Length: 317
View 1 (cartoon, rainbow, N blue to C red):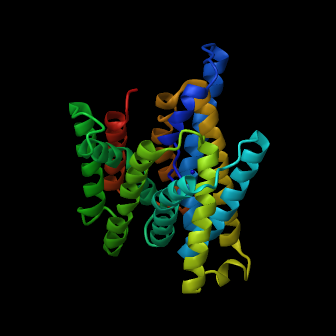
View 2: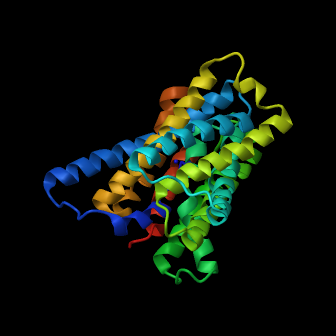
């Protein structure tokens, strides 16, 4: 689930060792490319969908609560079909809790919170920065070695963020700057999640089991938050466009997890990581198509720098 979302592009690489032998035929490569395109378009679309829900007045905690419930239930059903159910012992519950906070509850709450205050294209750009933060955290913890190309990617990512924040003409309204600054916490959380998952991933669980368990734990967390803040009631009354958007968002998350698993099994994690490029460009164009957004030249420049950052910072192995 990535832009975003729970983004499993990092941790699902654990599935590679269990995958079938890769088919190198032209037909197989074409199918993999089509699946990759669909995944990237779906990731990019999710930012506009969450903005539709937020713009309709639905509260952030309520959006995450329903999304995690529907998405977790769908993934739980996938686990049942595969006969590999999530494990609920103490060790797995603690792991699910960390995943829930870092990859769903906190970042999704922030996405829903800022979505009504900034353009969908800008949210897409900001939320597609996790690879840079992942590398910074990995470097700090000694999990990665210093590499010139990846450091250059970090600098490009920093430049991308600064082009959104500093020029007075970058955003449609200068009052959006604090919200963009707050949104920068989203990729920081996802970056921390990737390190957390890489360090503590339980060897007896696959990505579907972890995703289902983490989303259901996220639902419990956000249900408590929504009930405490009074944000649960709007999710079950006066059904409207925003409610359908939340259901669509949850369905996208579940579909993305299945797509991600399928592509990694077919072509490997490095090939699958290229969906990041498609998603960030698609997210900007989805915002233009759905909301009529007209990105400034600064936003286009930020997009170009981010694409360069992703090309430099993504792992080659």
